[in-house]
Image (tube, rainbow over all chains, first blue to last red; front, side):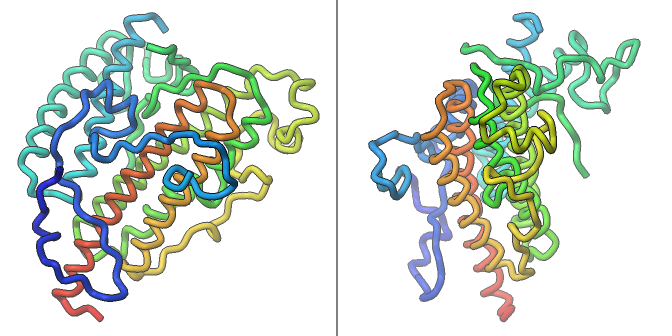
Length: 62
Length: 86
Length: 190
């Protein structure tokens, strides 16, 4: 998985703030794969799986 | 558009896309040397491909050098190209 | 300033003529969570960002969104360019057609014109970056609904690409928020 980016080492989470972890570039797709997939980075690749529609939510909840 | 032109244009689109991804990554990780090196390698490749394409098929940007008559206006324009599954 | 490259960002393929689908796709051409909103929003917010890094990200993602706007316009155009009037009549695209012919026009799927009311630039970098992260999620969700209603394989393929871009953009805005937040803490801006 990703090494820890220096910003994430702080461990000082402050209330009433939002935190997105930093990506650290690791492997990359080939240019052909990258364009097809929509990203150069395997760790950011989140294909949309079509599950039966429950009427709410998107990719993450079904 | 003939097969070879479409193939070269597709390759340009692929390298161009890699550069978009490396640029965005470097915008938030300006000190990542591996990413910078990857970007610069692909940037070099991109310039070469653009040169090749423009010499053979006409301008991609209107700042390039054109043969006669001015070929930047030539068809097909981007929305007129249908890319087959390849 | 802007340079135009005479190519689409993605190799778009449209397999059918489908005015109804075009009327839905247009949601991302002129709707609240579409590419025009995204592009104008990010490019508008640039001026009041406190770090070079944030100015770069808003510039670059804003520019990419305009390239996506071009792709959506192309999808709409290709879905209707060969349609006869009979194919258009009785579809949601007919209302668009009587106003604009086959020309893609920035309004949403319900026909409401694009407005700057769809975007915000608060001049407060923290508020603006949260707005941007929300915008990316709304765009992603919209693409998922559109993928569900689409039945043209080429169109679906392009929608999947555009949806994936939103996920990457969210990550970048999230990182930008961290950097800006740290910078503001350091300068004790508040």
